[in-house]
Length: 174
Image (tube, rainbow, N blue to C red; front, side, top):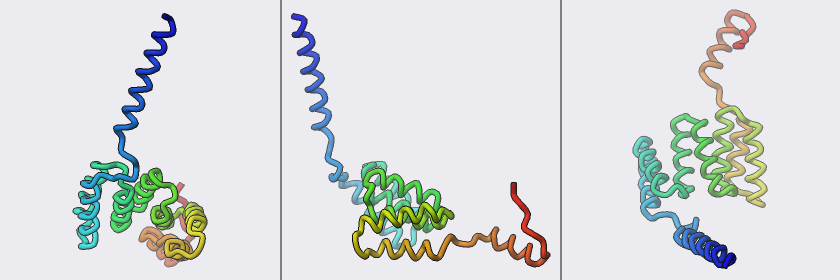
């Protein structure tokens, strides 16, 4: 009698776990509505409508949070708006879904260079080269962006021209 209660509890637990696992979709089956919204977002981005593209892509991610391509497109839109920090975060979301996504790794590396994190971008380049096992355009593009270095900001240009004109040493911003 003592074992009957334990056996019944164990069988109920097994049934509930198997039912929950059976009800979930595999990761490779992204919701069709999310994919349609992704395509609309791509079209809006191609037309130059970054606000519309963001709306479509954010809705695509809301419909199915496993839509890695939507995260990558959102990151590209963020980069187009000059928001490398946001792009890095969105690429990270895509890489959480698929750590070996070469497009997300190289895009994140480019955003890191724009943010000034060249060392971390080199780590991404090493990962991309290891995954490609040959020549791939993502590795070539990322290597070129790293070689070019981070962009010069207007604050840096203004500080350099002021110190050059006065002959003074740059002041510390501590």
